[in-house]
Length: 364
Image 1: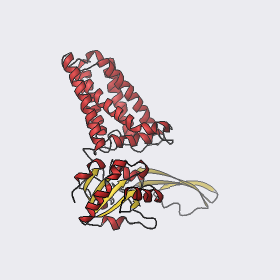
Image 2: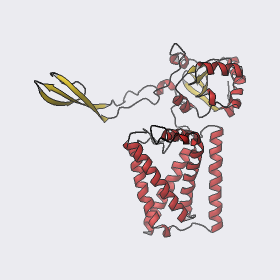
Image 3: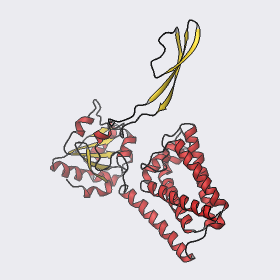
Image 4: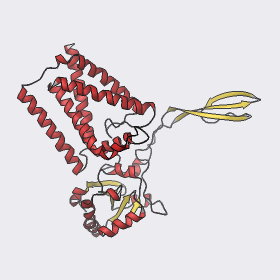
């Protein structure tokens, strides 16, 4: 039992630290996922949506701290009870999301590793078993140092987590796993590779022929002879590959300008998913930045999901001499974790990307 507890202790502690740090690298992204869970279509508790960022930071810091506590043997009773409570809750959540097909990606490992809800549920069930071993064998969880050393390690871990979370919120995630990271080409990520797998779908046709009801399963052609098609059901046998980027567009009121802008040699994109929620300090920095960029030969434009009236209001308020174009809000939240943020492109390749706090660091 002692050996089994030690193995489970190492596995659970390492996984909680890793999973927590991945999400702590991008707490804003995890808060967007929590908002999805809190929405009407999933858990139907929209009253929690305004507090998603605070909950996000608390959950991921607590996750890392529990992993550290477990590995160093600090407060084992509190640690094991907390781990059990957390994993029971997340096992229920992932089962609910998977069974009712509410959420396509659980967000357990952020953008680093995408898991389907059923995969995430399976992972949580395994973790639940490991944590139950720890729960019933907690007497074997021994501290690795003296009381002062454990307290110091726990305190330093907590401070380090808070500092890291604050740092990435005030700047950008230290590690960017999204399809808009520096060095990526947006056009290339909008295309499928040559070896991409096609989706395989079974079509189950129900029809009548000579007054007799029949069924046929094929890949979409349907029955060649029939009196009447009663209905058809589909079943996905194999999911097809999809591009890394699917919904990125740059649109005016009348036309799609995506290709036009992405083919430019020098382009600065100001990204604000919602101009009503944009940070005023950040918006105030845009005028000077845009003037410097234009002097260096760059085209400056904005992307937002806000309406035309708000676009004109913002241009007037902050004296901005560039136009805002339309893009999906979820896409803009993915491009840059800041409101506003700035992305510098060359023929669709991301050269620079900064939080509004770091606009002064842009090089033109």
